Length: 146
Image (cartoon, rainbow, N blue to C red; front, side):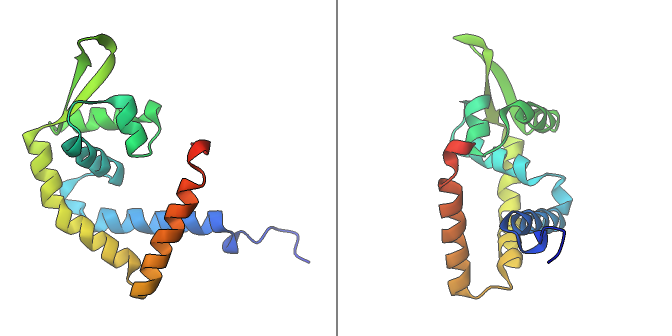
């Protein structure tokens, strides 16, 4: 019996490796945009819900609320996001994607679609659907855990 734990076959390790692959492919396909997957998710979320507060937005894109401020700050520095204090509660920050940010996000849609295709290329169509369903079930089964 081996002394070490067989982490190679552990689901957590495989999910981490899949995440590494997803990010690497994303960065390759979107290299000309200088944007991360989380930044892209934030831009897209704000296009759907302009004026959303920073904490709610972080929850929607499943990103740590404390860290989201620095990510949003980078998007703001690029001129892609506008942040303002809520008139009812100055501590609360409301966010909007700028016209430039929306244009960049829309330009990236084709590249991001390629990311998904490349990532899932080793799988057959039925396996792609199965993987999406299982990942969705795994995630929803742990929603309360954060």
